Image (cartoon, rainbow, N blue to C red; front, top):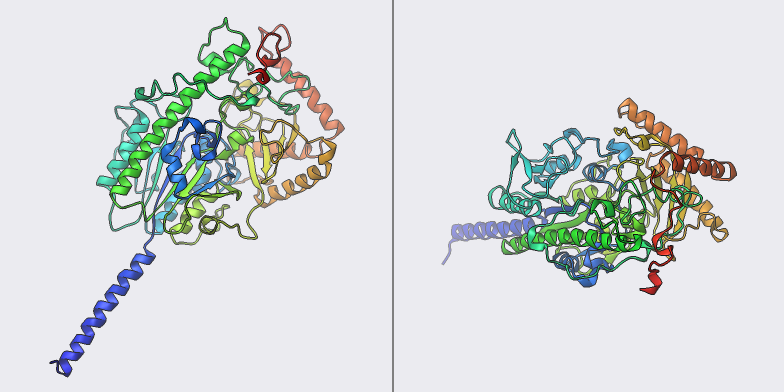
Amino acid sequence: MLNKNGILVFIVLISGMVGSAMQKLEHSETKKPNIIFIMSDDHTWQAVGAYDSRFKYLNPTPNLDKLAKSGMVFDHAICGNAICTPSRASIMTGQYSHLNGVLTLDDALPESKQYLAHEMRRAGYQTAVIGKWHLHDLPTAFDYYKVLPGQGKYFNPEFFETGKKKKFRVEGHSTDCIMDAALEWFATRRKGDQPFFLKLHFKAPHDYFKNAPRYDDYLEEVAMPEPLSLWARGEGSVATRGVDGELERVIGTSIGRRNFRRSYDADWEVDEGLSDAEAKREAYNVYLKKYLRCVKGVDDNLGRLFAYMEQEGLLENTVIVYTGDQGFFLGEHDFQDKRWAYEPSLRMPLIVSYPKTIPMGVRSDALVENIDFPATLIDFAGVSVPDYMQGRSFRSILETGEEAEDWKQAAYYQYWMHMAHHDVPGHIAMRTKRYKLIQFYGTAGVRGYRSERSWESTPAGWELYDLEKDPTESDNVYDHPDYTAVQAELKKQFKQLRVAVRADQVNENLPIEAQQRMAEVNRMIEANWVYEVAAKEAAVQQSKIYAERFADPKQTEPYVVPWLRPGTLDPSEK
């Protein structure tokens, strides 16, 4: 029997136990999620099974598809500058290229601008980045890094690592080595009492594609499904085709022999005795098989990661994001690489899973941009998104499936590296859910490259695509009378968007040469905004000048698209 003092002690004990239990419950409910941001270089949405592309039946990504079923897939994730370094900088800063200053592959992101790492550390996270960084300055804003120098190597890659003054080599294929490093970090460096933020970046499947030997036989006997636009490229514009096709040979590197300066046909040294159509088909099959073998290596290694996380009980409280640093052309329009504002390049795969709050197996058609990624991760970390970020959190879309009334209805795009590497002219674009409006402004927008063609102006031109009716972007309706009102309204919206994202201004924080180039680009954009008789005539003349200046010295007759050449195979006959 308890006396009064005993009863008091009992009450105090019970109160303490209840209070402790409540604190544990509250801690459990408010515990910050771990966050893993996984990005593969040039892994495009067409090569993810969850996107139902022509490759789905090949089952290239079973582990990613499983992740997609556990979370949300975005059908309109947009990259604002579809090339490695600028895209990565936007994801680290939450800013477009013209604001963060990383316009080209040459521009660096210093520690002071590695904003995402700084914000996650302020939010109480243990931070790490492993794999391909490709932002020149080392990622010293992270607690730990183990990154490839520059582009890195596929085999026996070298790494820079926190605390080590010199880079060192690791034996094996880069995809395996990067995953080994991630699992080692989990096993030896992760602090169990602190939420973690891990950026895990694969080099694969960046060209030139080199898979681990165990995948050499993968898809060997399979004929790769072809996009119709590999053969029937569409009309484009004077900026991309010329007036009479005279720019076909010099704009956009090709799979087949169309571009005499760079093609996969030449890279792979396809038999010169083959017809153009035969050579294109052989080059395409080699290109796709090598690419998908690299994708397979990434997906298999993700299987290792997910199995480890399940074993360690980490899946339930971890936000997992998977994306590519941009899209990639897999033969569409007879193009290689990325850079263009067309769908294969501009769109990114984006899958987000978090069992606690994100519904399973859901798709979203919301427009999201890569500048929105850091804001969303910071939101999940439980802190406010800083004002200096142009991006906006889409966490509410992930958790409810609904867009806020004031959510963006257009995404902005600008490619700066005029005619560098893959012969893509500088251009700007606006992408809505239904339409895409592109202006090729004609002047050189590149900084840091000195090849002749990088400084030469190409013709200015406009393209407009109705993505609802023409998802492959084969029919440029810019001058079509049925789209006169649509064109006018979109150009008005486009101009407003440029002002809103500050693309119409010169960034005075950049080096003087970059400011001068930015001012010149903006001048040309404005000069060709009203694209009527005089501007069109000037474009025609510039097309002829460019074609003559950079003509193929071996070409003695006009180039004909291969499937239209007599005796070759028309896609309709396949």
